[in-house]
Each structure stands twice: as structure tokens, then as C-alpha cells.
Image 1 (cartoon, rainbow, N blue to C red):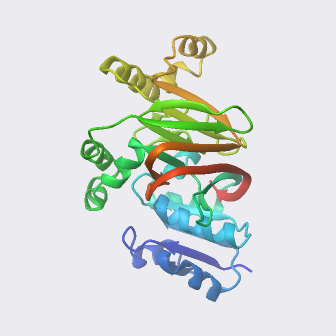
Image 2: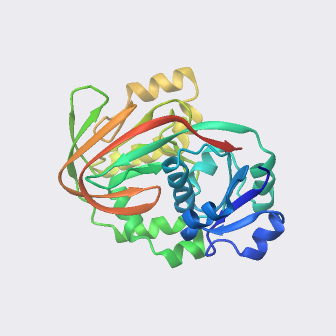
Length: 298
């Protein structure tokens, strides 16, 4: 069992480029992943060439078939959230070397359950409220042209933002009732643009982290943006810096929660996104972490 299968998104990378990177591989188009991988039979490594959506398709296949085949990532999508958090190069040639010869790391993944739908597995972030609206409103053609910066335009189109009421249950604790703009339930903490949304999140810590965001006034937004950009990156790693940031935190603007199981109930229907893909309006979603479920070359 030595062959390499490469699942790719033809809108993100050409077959010619893929063949030059992996001349002995067996290519499978992402939309045909189930049929294509079954027809291939045994393979020792699975390379994913695409964005977070393509990666999620592959992870879904692996989890549903109880497989732990090591994967490599060629991050040619818009966000490339997992690749960024694992330090995988965005250069295709370098990423291709890492995909085959990198160190293997076991990481957690998230599982989301909505109504009677089958579980949805994810590696990065699930979001409710404004975050999901931004994903829904972002123009795919613009994403292809300018990358993750297109989300800014999507954010403008998602305005006016509205506050929503959620009940959040973390593990077996009492539910928390919050009124916020967005909730982000994450396996990873760093976003494109070097935004440290959740500085303490780790891909292998056996937990999901929740960012509860509800800035109301312009000075609240300035505080939140300062925290998730330069403060979380440069100040929080210092012992005194962490104490100062915790002491001055405005929990109504930005609060962090953590647990193995997260249940979110919305007073009214709220848009849900998972790894950048809009799922639709929901009133309830249950999420849990599956520790060390995925093996990644990084």
C-alpha cells in the first residue's frame, strides 16, 4: 500500500500543476471523492489540494469510513485555516514536500449535529450570527481574485449586523444566556491576516474554544480589534501581559469559553457556517471535539 491519492478542487488548482507536484499520484476531483477513493482501493497517503471546504469533504469521508489515513495539505483556498494554524507553507511547491515528507501530527476535529442531519465534521471554525452571514454574503468570484480580503467586502454586505440571543451550554455546566453579534466555535485560533481570534486554542488540546463577541459601541470594537490583532500576538504571551488583558477584559464585548461539548440554542433562527461553508438557518446545534482523530503531515 504505497500509492498516494490526491483529492483536488479543479477551480483552485489545475490537473497539470497537480501532476507536476505528484507525478506518481492518483488524482480524484473533490466532488467525486467517495466514488473516486473507493475505486482507487488502498493508498498510504491522501493529499488534499484545495481550500477549507475541500479539506472538510475529505475529513467527512475519512470519519464516516473510520479511516485514519495520514493527509497532506496543499492550501490553495481562500482561508486555509488549518494549514495556517499548523504552519504549513502557502507556497505550493513547499507544501507538496511537506505533504509527503513532513512530520505526522495527530490533531482534534470537531463534529457538529444539526436537527436530523448527519454529523458534519470540521477542522477549523463553526460560526453563528454575523460570522456566518459574512461567509454567506462573500462573493465567490471575488474570493478567487483577491483571496481572504474578499471577506471584508462580504462583511460590508452583511450589514446591518443584529444582536441575537443564544443559550450556550458548555459540557455539563449551567446554560449561559448571551446577547451577541456572533459566536465562533473553534478547533483553531488563528485567522487569515494574522488575526489571533482565540489565542489559547490548540488543534490537539482535546477542547473546542468559543469566542462570544458582542461589541456595541465604537470603543468596544476598537478594544476587540486591538485584542485579536496585536495584543493577543505580542502582549498575551507574556505573564504580566496575560494578567493585564484578563483584568481589563470587557466580557460583554469578547469572552472565551472552552469545553469538550458545546450546545447552542438560538431564540430565533441564526445562520450557521462550518469551515467557511454556509449551512443555513438553525435554531440549535450541538458540537463536540473528537480528540486526535486526524493525522496530518506538517
